[in-house]
Image (cartoon, rainbow, N blue to C red; front, side):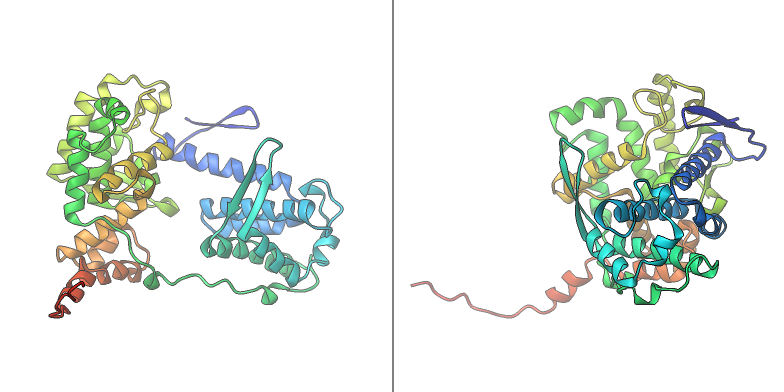
Length: 381
């Protein structure tokens, strides 16, 4: 029985599949949040809602709805394009009067804007990748409303282009193998931690080590790791199951390193934490409060230990996704086929994996070291 809370009421769904309740519950949470946002938006957008529901991933659907709601609030608060006081009150006639130039002004607004909540003014900035996503959300909406005859013309051709760097143009950030060892030494011994950090480390070091080892071994996505359960593992067969995007399931083999760190964590640390609720009893990685560890907590611990490996500030530490890149570059660097690595990491296109193959460790340093010049130091007078 999977449970979720919506509109102050508890919703239950009978889980008749073989998927764990926490996976079903997460899907329900996304679904209910989407439904909640749709209720805030005009009813003439029903065809757009149906298009998103049937054609994009749940998380993408949620992101698009957030963007469209943001756009509608922009129309109300920052323009005179509507007389509505609430997003639901915006009319199709008012949408018909919006031009491509209005959308371009919106995208420019999104680059940097302020939000005043009465006590604090917060400045928000969006990079080109975030702007491109907002443009896509609004473009899909206008195209769908035009196809359904709600809008008289398709204005999307007039939207300003937003240049986003191609994957090959971006520097791939990943730990090198020696930096991985520094990171794992830090979580094992507590080296590099502050006095305050060591207080928590004493109670979570085995959990944190298991998390880091699983990231750099399998290149798991953050959500995939967080949703792991004890029941996901069959230690006698040396394997575990993960739930990927689009509802895919994958069986992953356990190696000795992973089996060792998980065994240490489960027997010596996890068993001392009492799961607070039924849903957390099966969760593999628990917080000190006995709940399934949050994505934010995982990000923070990864940033902390990667910053020690990089010898930089905590703020400059790496995200879990960069440990996914670390796994990819390390596997390819050891001579593994990019097709095998693509299968392990669940890349839909092998071209994504090829980017990591092009990222050879120390390649720039090796090139430059071959270009030394015999120079004499100028005498200072």
